[in-house]
Amino acid sequence: MLNLADGYAHGEGVDRNTERAIQIIEEAMRMGIPAAFNVMGRYHMEGMGVKSDPSRAYAFLELAADMGSASAQAFIGKALRAVYDDPAQGFWGNRKIGIKMMECGFQQGNREAAYALGLSLIGRDSAMGHDMERALVVLHDSVKLGSDEGASYLSLSFSVGRPLVGGFKDPTRADRYSTLAAALRIDPDLRFPNLDKILPLPPAKLPMWNGDRNTLLDAAKPILPRPAAPPPPEPNPAWLLTGRAHIEPGRQLPEQPQRQIVPQYESTAAPETGYWIARLMHPVSERHRAWDAQQLPMRYLKGELFDRSRTGLQDEDGRIRFHYLGEAIDQLPPAPIKDDPRLARRAARYSDIPKTERYYRSHSPCPRAGIWRPYLPDTHPLHASFNRWDRQAYVRKGMPFPAVVTDRPGIEEKDILWQWLANANEVHNGLEHVTLTPGEDDDALD
Image (cartoon, rainbow, N blue to C red; front, top):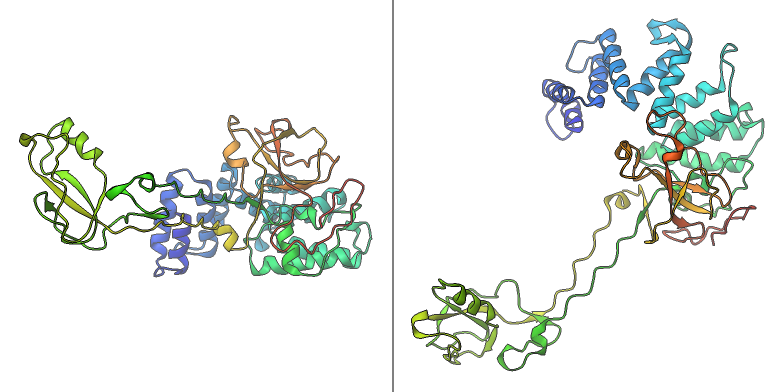
């Protein structure tokens, strides 16, 4: 509904019709969808189909934020993070609530909230202080969530040695963040949950990189299970039969005959070479239907008389007709498995995810380096909103699992399980030229 409304609002794929866009959003609001209130707030802010009214816009946005819209929380959080009020410029001095709003949006995986929160934690006012250590982590996480601004900021920080990175200049890290930022500007739908595999924060050692852009991006993207190969076709029982019912191995009858021929009575000859099957003209009893079900396709040459034996039938059961099924054709191969559309968009890559599931608690040390998936069991009331397909993390052996929730009502770290998805040295989709320099806890990717 929201995508359709956006199409009408901007004339994308349909004729521009802002009145229709408003109607759709209002219907979504009546359904209680938080994002719909966020969109309505943006419409009032921009004057899209309604009169521009910042006061109404902020009322809708605040309501959306209260209902749980991460995008609205990011917007309101940025508007409240100042140290003084300036309504004309659209910001107010309520930094404490602003930080809280951005935290909520960040916990739900919103990249704008993560980037804004990271900048706010750097601290631009003496009253609130700063938290450089967490700011660095949050900005790094904003890149995982797809923030090109976060990647650009970190690239510059490592390039010039800002206080955020302890005054430490690292052109290699800066170059990688710059590569990620450029990719995200081209495709904002990209996500890099496994960023730590190719760009861990200091003091972890950087893995070596061959300089190929796609190699770097693919290694950080989320992984999807590689589809299983289609099963081989089942052998046809008719291959083992003899006489007219025999079909050559590797062949099968077509779903539809090559020619449409009127059914022929049993007292006639086959007008066309091929497989024919006998059927009662008027099956009225279970015995009749059982007889029909027992009949096998039989091959007759053109001009050959049909079998008149009527085995198992009596005269009162009625007449038989033979139906043309066609000539045997080569057995069709199994339909190829279509690639996941996220793979076609280069938003993810395939990996041979182990079928044997092994789970670990958040408080456990990571037993092996690789890509891990944090998730809530299906019995948890918030599992549907937490268990996203792209929520993954690259964790080194012996390190603690990362904290994926710090302040999200209803979810605690002890509720979360971790599932191992892929080894540190798994090789797929152009990664064969990458070599990691092992750290103390790292496996090698070769």
